[in-house]
Amino acid sequence: MFEEDILNLIPQKPPFVMVDKLLFSDDDITKTSFTVTADNVLVVNGEFTEAGLMENMAQTAAAGEGNMARIEDRPIAIGYIGAVKDFEIFELPQINDELTTEIKIETRLLNVAIASGKVWCNERLIAQCEMKIFINTVND
Image 1 (cartoon, rainbow, N blue to C red):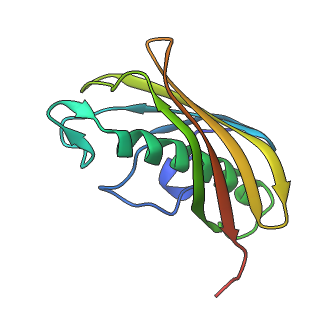
Image 2 (cartoon, rainbow, N blue to C red; image 1 turned 180 degrees about the horizontal axis):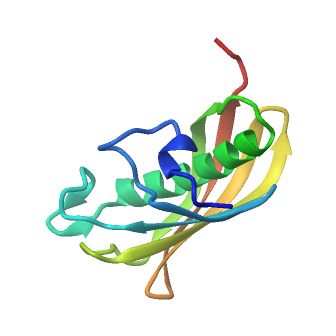
């Protein structure tokens, strides 16, 4: 089910792609994996930055929405982070670390979703937050 190229599911394009594989996706939960590389634009001094972790969570949410759009045969909508709450970083990942990220949609109302995000590295929770995501439902 998830063999499709991740680039078909998210609006971001290289070099600003912070997810590699869609591992799982249903109506409420999406899981992705991502390997940090030395040439990543959000790696500084060998570490994947705070901004990289936030973008990884946002792109995981986008991959879930993109997968649902693909299943429902509708265009992929673009989402925007409207607010971030309780953003905590416990550790910054290093080059070659593989991240597993989970986004859980807690609430949906019209074109707004409240989502909790968590990032693990080597089975340790390294970052988490809550995001308010606005989905652009206007088609060009």
